[in-house]
Amino acid sequence: MRDSLLSLALLAALSSVSAHAAEPAAPAASPAGELQALQCGQVFDARSGKLTGPQTLLVRQGKIERVGAAEADLAGATRVDLSGHTCMPGWTDLHVHLGSQSSPQSYSEGFRLDEVDFAFRAVGYANKTLMAGFTSVRDLGGEVSPHLRDAINQGLVDGPRIWAAGKSIATTGGHADPTNGYNDALSHLIGPPGPTEGVINSIEDARQAVRQRYKEGSDVIKITATGGVLSYARSGDAPQFTVEEVKAIVDTAKDYGYRVAAHAHGEEGMKRAVLGGVTSIEHGTYMSDDVMKLMKQHGTWYVPTIYAGRFVADKAKIDGYFPEVVRPKAQRIGAMIQETAGKAYKNGVKIAFGTDMGVGPHGDNAREFIYMVEAGIPASVALQAATIRAAEVLGVDDQGVIEAGKRADIVAVPGNPLEDIAQVMKVDFVMRDGKIYRSPGR
Image (cartoon, helix red, strand yellow):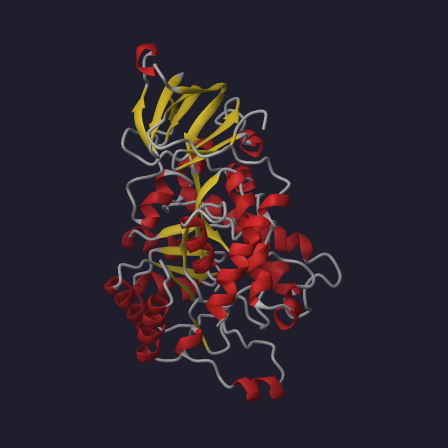
């Protein structure tokens, strides 16, 4: 019944939310086989991190057919003038939550709204994310996202390509325990959540929780290896899994071809997650030199989510925005992430791009690039983090670069973002799988 309602909501949203979106309307999809020629003033080479000068990109049937085409190759092609722009591979945000967006009402909405309400909202959030230049996302926690993914894949709504985690896996009382903050009467009525609800307390539970995510159609596994900032609980950094539990999750995930992302703020929780074999550490606030060394030894990726840290630290200054149990965590932890990201880069930790958007407003994802540069990360490295490095985290090789045979996911901004990273906030061309969703003047 729940799945049917979500599907109906997403179908209805095609004619409701999309029709009233504030973003520019998308041009009609190109007919199958039509040749498109994108005439770029500059092209960002994600492998080298450099600009390669003016290039014409030929696109056909959702793929890049040729890079650097000559005039003779353009016969019959539909031309798109991007001569004043830098063309880049479509960006990937490795940490979003498309089913929600932070507000002072967030903590009560779960009791007042139905899943269909969140599904309707998610359609709008997905559209904003795509129009901001993000052609792919990894949604790390939210029961709406697998259904939204399917609707996008079927062409029912517009949005980025989604790798969906579904329900995050937690321990009892952990950051993703859905019953945190419930009173005794409600807790007794509902009963303690278990692996089906993504809450574990043993190795066997861990295996069952992963298998349940497989049953529900997840693409990736998310665990909450430590406490969190916004959960209704005191600790934002205490470890919440044993190494053995993490390893059981990772090993079971491998059976289904899944990679595992670990939300983690505290040092001990990060160590256990890395030793357990996770693919990436998200947030990493209290990342020590020892943790960085361990991550380099194990090849673990770091997804900083600076945006979320700055956002919650700022909102913690506003009376009533967060519950009082959350407010001190937001003040203390949020402000530290940007400094940690800069330190991790200098120490050689592998960094990929993620915002934790849904904490902040969807569509503002590109501001993370600016915050990364402010942290001391070169603009070229920041752009690589959202292109080729993000593809490596996902384990795919058909996107993240502008090369013949790859997906035609292309975003363009005016000017030179390597000289002025603020240009990333001026996206006016977006193509995903060869379809133009945004173009200059529209």
